[in-house]
Length: 317
Image (cartoon, rainbow, N blue to C red; front, top):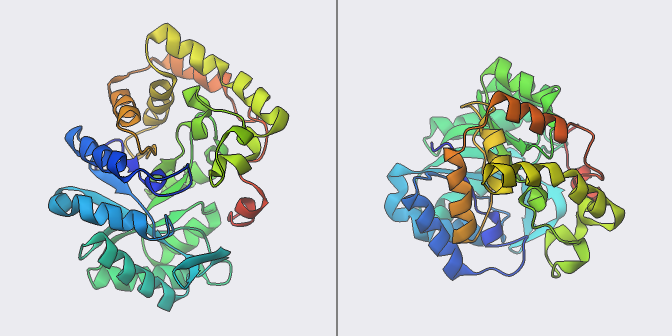
């Protein structure tokens, strides 16, 4: 797959009103710039993001990598709060729906979106293994899973990749999870590699975002947390100016420096941001610059939880 992927969630949900025309332009521009890895999920919309990718990427299906996710509960086409459902029958139902919406006969990389505490991870892995044997799925992934869960799943069927939040801004996986991935030969797909906007320099206070925008409920955007976090990211902005690149490019270059087994998926629905992000592939940082960035935003620098209470409850700890 390409060294940099495209997170497609924001094209349909989470960050304000959808703009299909701009989203379609962004998808096609990504292809033109050499991006071949596109990440979606059944819950994005729900369902409409998969449909968008199915329509627009069908003609190039054989030359791209598609990842999608299962694991939330739905009734009458709507998500049921934060309830998860990774029962084997539900996984099969989700995969059939994703295949139909993506207009494909296989999913390249299938992630469990969040660990379901009511279903043993061994049962999840065994179910995906059967789907791989049937040719409906090529590879198995987990999202936001703990080291112990990763090991348990991997013992049943090989885990190809973990999708988790990772950036210069959020480094919680470095202590235990990243070493586990390296030990087992599992790749990392970091989402929010731009620190949910803080590393771009464009973040605004929570109340300045429209209703329905997830940043309104992000603790790091709220109250005094926002002021402290903008100050914490100042060093990144200063170094980017000195190098003549954007803060986003600097932040992505840092993540890309972590190795070829790390493929970030910065999300955007705008062509101009996509072009800026893809240009990060041409940025090469020196060891000294990388060390300076490590020190500028060392773990513990950022203020506030990375999710609200509902999001934290869904994490596998």
